[in-house]
Length: 55
Image 1 (tube, one colour):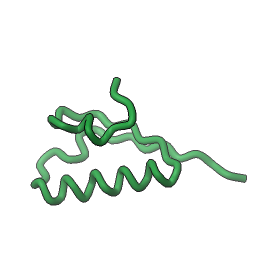
Image 2 (cartoon, helix red, strand yellow):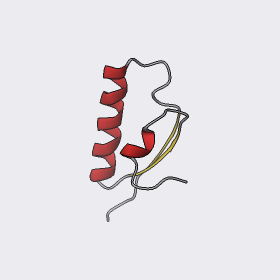
Image 3 (cartoon, helix red, strand yellow):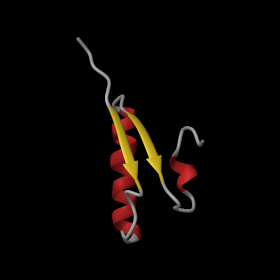
């Protein structure tokens, strides 16, 4: 039986340099592409460019 995955993150890129923040973005995007629901809280400017939906 298939199951759903929900990932919740609070400021996962805080304190990371640009290179490592991009790695985190790519990992989160892969999780979404693989069927996970990702809820991300951030103050990072430009994060909406990576989102499917912004609340």
